Image 1 (tube, each protein chain N blue to C red):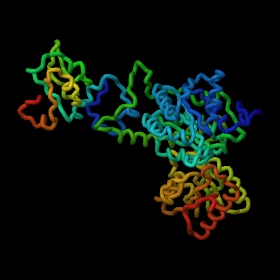
Image 2: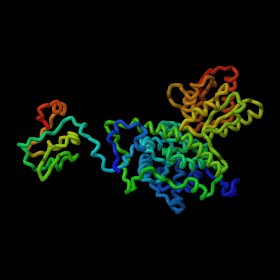
Image 3: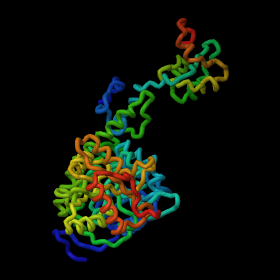
Image 4: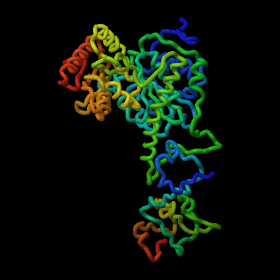
Length: 402
Length: 110
């Protein structure tokens, strides 16, 4: 253990799941309800040990399924507690109906989801199909490139979710095994600093407040106000744009690592660019930097915030490009429409007078490795699109055995 | 202060409390559920022996009683489940088609 670059921080070697567990220990939530599933298991395992060792005052609920985990989290959050849980793939699938209830009831539950491919066939490795399926569930979604960002996002998630203008649940996403089970360099903040940063949770309503009794989870009546409540949720998501940036900036002041919707490399003078999210950003960045060193005008955007989708900012960032390649670690099965990031980015560009050509690379499904060679292949094709001004094939599979 | 939901049907989306919370107790009486009814119970005063079994069984407290006597049926809250008619030992409660009852200008089924 060595002292970090900023006073009060220490640099440690941790696997991604332990980095999350450390963040949880420092946040010290009132309630954690969780069920183990590979590759999330290590988070819950490590955290259970912390609870058993008395390092936190969390009430840990060991439930019998993920459906129950999210149900218990919802009940606890409605009673005014700060609540966390964690899951992966099939577990997220089993939570499905409860995801919408958590967001619909406006409960700021924080959930790291260790991205893993959904069955069938059974596969325990990384892709983003699980959380991408939940993109319309009303949760905020923050992607992480490495263990450090998983830790940082978890801490920021508390502040984003609990902001009175937001009050929405947040998913922190990290790639299964690539981040969750690989040892990484992580700078941990001082316990006090995190505790002060997250502050105390002041719920909007609480079932346990006998002086102001409320009823939660009611039938909306046969007259129906469902439509109005959904509009409120959309407003909260819109508000979260501002809050995510404010929290990211404030986090920068305590850590030296400010956060925004996305990170850019070389976009000022690039002619074409790659957009990527999650751990693959590391591989892509290396290639982009190598190519730039050779004078190739390539740039890169690493997307961190997928929900809400920063459409305006992304469109602005790529509007001058000749061509952009979108890397998607999941497919939509919409009939050759490409992955979710591609579809949404295309929609974001529609209103622009001048817009770049767009190509999609679906890669890494079920944990298929994204090698440097594959990134090079896509980059070369992208350069060709930029030069010729023509897209031969909008949706491509990178690393698929033909 | 009691939560005034008189005009709730006219409220815009900004007016509703967060997440569908009912933020004040004791206002269910303002939410009339009688409109859910397809059949309405009608009591025959002649046959009724005032045993109050319907009063006990009604899940919505829609049988009105005073001083040990049935005084009527609260159609603002009766959902027309028919339990009162099924439980009545004297067959003094009949279930009448709600549309017919509404058309009944003579007031026979009230």
